[in-house]
Length: 254
Image (cartoon, rainbow, N blue to C red; front, side, top):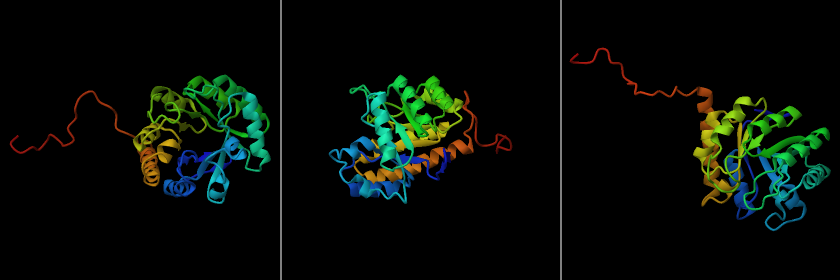
């Protein structure tokens, strides 16, 4: 699957936050089979607690790094962090997150759109994190975003897919990859959105805070793969009435 100028075999993307330690994170990443790993540039740059030395534990020959603007609440903050990421020599990709709401952590649609336009003009590959708003998703595609990344439910909640119908519309209308991000709690959630036709899932908390993050990472790898295979295979139509799976002709006694 291609995103901008990169091709990936795995449809599972993973994060770097909330792990107990870097060794567990590394093992979970390996078990996930993921090729894309996202990291908060603001926290790395400031050596925030739990992120000291993070970059030393990411094999950039193995993983494509997706820097993000987590922790930014305004357009200006997001632009500054994105430009810092490029200046650090990471790459020109940016997962654009602008979240002014500290309680529910919902992304700001207007600020996201404004920042995306500026960053695209500055030749960033922009992957915006958004609420599951089909109109916003289409507008972001039209201005040149590389993906859209709608949330399934509020970030870190593990509530699963609360925006199912809107995600369906986003997928139906999109001509760019759809990455379902935030709120997914278990592999069956990921499998469900992949069955609907999503191109990727990005999972962090559900893996990092599982009782066994390494095993959960592998479970998500299988869930995402199964969901995509089911989508490609094509499910049977949903019927109102029962339909016998065995033929009714040639039955003994008839």
